[in-house]
Amino acid sequence: MTGRRGWPCRPVLGIGLGALAVGASCASPMVGLDGFIGELAASWRPHIALGVAVCAAMALMVRLRLLAALLTALAVVLGADVVRTEMISAQAQVRSSLPEDGALRIAFSNVLVVNDDTGRLVAWIEKSDPDIVVATEMSPRHVEQMAEFMADYPFRVLEPREHPYGMVVYSRYPISSEAVTELADGTPSTPDPVMVTVGVETPAGTLHVTGLHPCAPVTPRRLARRNEQFAMAGDILTQLDAPKIVAGDFNATPWSAGLRAFLRNTRLTGFNTRATWPVWLGFAGIPIDHALASRDLRILDIETGPNIGSDHRPILIDVALAGPETAHVSP
Image (cartoon, one colour):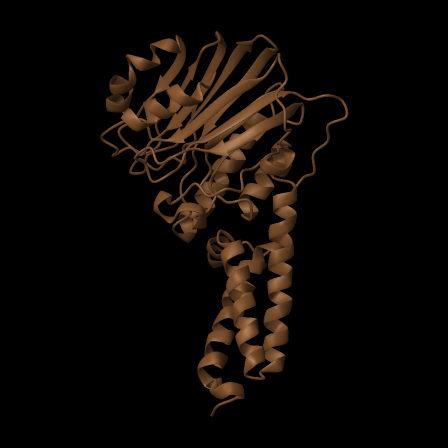
């Protein structure tokens, strides 16, 4: 069976129905269906929206009009959410000029616990010149490798681990308070993420900075566990005085229902929409590394860094105290 211009209808029908199923899974968290397949599909929402649109065009070319209409409607729904997400992202909140006083630069990197060489990370930090550095997947070996260079950051809380959940914070400004929390579930065989929160005494006042790295949702059980860790972290963060920054590998994209719930509960804003993982996919990857800000901070700039030998790109964010006219929209 063939259609217009010799296009085979049956293969296009099969591809279109497959795209419809994937697209529906991708849209399911938008209507409150927070299942494992939906979470994974939603992580790739821009890619899937584009793929569904292409399949809609293919279906239309072979005159499968009902299928084309369904795919088009689905592509519009997914695409509209991608556009809306971009409109309330950190990138959309960026102000073009930095103020002379009160600006702070925070760097975050997932170093990758098996990364044998921190030289590229050190070079990026030196070039970027942040005031505060937060890093996860830091092992004792990494801390030792970076010790000489990080002497420029005399204030620090170091909680390295041999597993992927070690966390460190380095600061040029004094640290007046610190809290280290293991987001534990009581399972001895599973390493627990380490959440580090510090109060940094900056020229503009105290800034609370938290490093967070919940587990990756690679199975239904780990998805539930990640969301539990979001809830535990959220309970702690809501008790912190603002202003505050939460930087980390969230193992969640801006289209994740889990991350959106975390943002609502903590009233944080400014998720990143530029690809950070996996680094070898370049701009076609997904954004799972973020530096979220409380609403009394203004995001001045945000950018992703280069390949530093990890599977993640680092991120760099500049913030300052926000004026009373500043407002943010919740996702």
